[in-house]
Length: 114
Length: 111
Image (cartoon, rainbow over all chains, first blue to last red):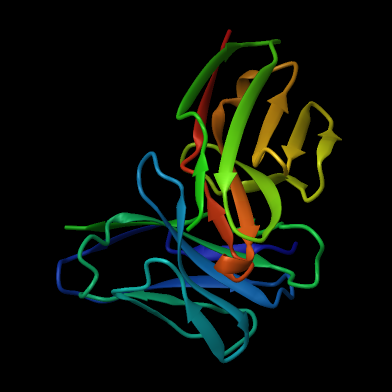
């Protein structure tokens, strides 16, 4: 079955530690995205990548870093510089050649900083 | 910049019809999308409107008026499983084609 996987589902981290969230897709999509969602809020774009070895900052990139070494993978690192990292993190992918706005989302990772 | 407005909460009863409105301010508008998200789950795509008019997909319909910068999602024959948050999202040239999401409308369906 094609889809997007994120791991882990729940993650706990101590203040001052970096942590990496995994995102893998087997949909053969060119574009991948990372969003942050806080309670009662919409999705805010952290980083996106439209092609391997290239990525762009979204609206709230400070304190985060990404890489796109393979088409299937787009890991997100939450660094110690991120002041309020506790949130629900969603990864998505899309086919840029499509005519609709469909983005396919993974199940998310809920990060809690202790 | 871009902004989207949608009601924060809506309550309806099973079997009823509910309309969730979305107004937006963008530049070089491409289209309006709707996503559904159950508590703790991933958003899933519902519909996309690039042109004025009504798009129907089963019990759900979505409408767009580009001149009014307005759209809505219409849910008919409500079921308990429709209880979820619904997000409108727009693409425009300023966001480099990326989606900008509204804050979401939490729909509660009562028996």
